[in-house]
Image (cartoon, rainbow, N blue to C red; front, side):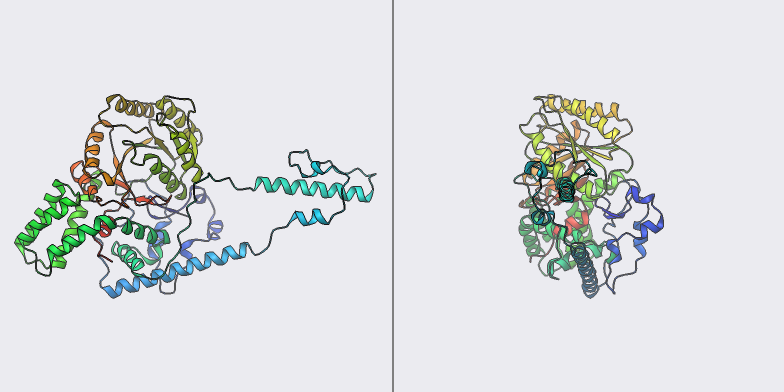
Length: 517
């Protein structure tokens, strides 16, 4: 089993589907370690079904009945924490058992043995041809020395073969998230998951960790937005004047004119129909913001963008310079590998200096093969052509294509994108092609203008919003969704290898509107 981060559930690897039930049942699964108070494991059986196409609604969205009370939420969080704690303890115990038996140390044997008549350099060089078996007429001392030499050479060869790949200088590996204390951040993350109808046994530690990162990343946007909203709402019921005051608050958060008008119009209708308490007004505001974010997603008929298994998917990453396309590509590759997909990268950014080297570093961190042309000013379309051929030969499921940064006003560079699309359509007519625009959230309304321009020229199918951490303009996601009518597919809230996740409108709004700590 593997946790598919695109679909956010446990799925079978293709190799596991062909295994017999006896073999499969012997595998250690994360959901096998549960707390005594874990919820019934009914939904777990659904997780083991074959993975459907990307159009399936996998992660429950908002609209599922939330937990009835604060006490229920707290109990749910406690049960989830106990389960994750038991799972982490079991993993630590398994790792300790695996390392309990110390490995054999061939050095001690070599030091305690008598000197060999064989030259010293010959005994230690792993490139030497193994010594043939000792002849029958050799003396006992010579025979023992020859046997020790053979064993030493075999151990040296094994050590070289087992040596882990060398990490690139200056690039740290992504550590596994650890379970912290049962604090306010954990309970908030658990509450967000429970409100979407998730069961205790379905929750993973990485989901808890990611929601905490998302909430932390939205801090600057939330700091001004929530404070002003709470001041505007006050303790009195909603009035038309209060709704009018919300307009400036939303516009300052780069929510955009169209999204702001749609949200306020819905609030005005509700205020005219009945008395709306302040807490109910805040809930209505969250619902309207979420609807604006999810409207273009629903229009595609695909709640989550996930590669289809057992067929080629080609994802093009486009955008201007400096928005984090190459970094996003590396994070997507890591997400794909950890979700059990066969992945490959095409380094089609042949214009920027050291672009191929940067792609290679990110790909190495995820152990993904890179197809590149080392020659200067190579044709990006030719690189994509070669990459598709290699992906088809190796039955790759996801091919990520890194493209050069370009301004939407450069017609020759936009035509280059069209040429790449033509190559893909001809070389792989049955491939599922996605064109994803990478936007820097810190650019605010300028990012919206980029989305509007690229949507016409690059046949965009979605947006990846990066650098939400450290930006006070995270509200631009609403502007992109409402005015450019583009679905947001992934969001990044950090520089780490795992700080990129599929977009979830409910979680985004909850992180945006979370109460100040």
